[in-house]
Length: 59
Image 1 (tube, one colour):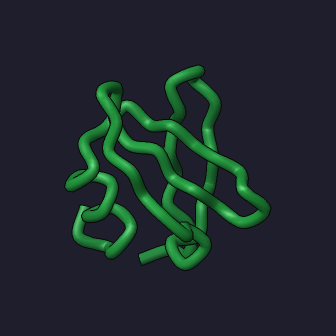
Image 2: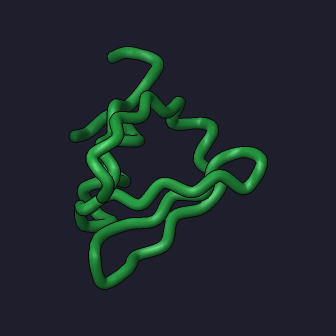
């Protein structure tokens, strides 16, 4: 398992996120919103359960 989870946001941008850097996760109508340090937000078009599995290494 690597240190980063690679996510593609709703705008098509790719992000490499350290699982430990995610401060909060919120389910939205379009997918899942992740809050990162300094208030940065990433909105991914995946169900919250899927994103949680990726972050804890199950996905």
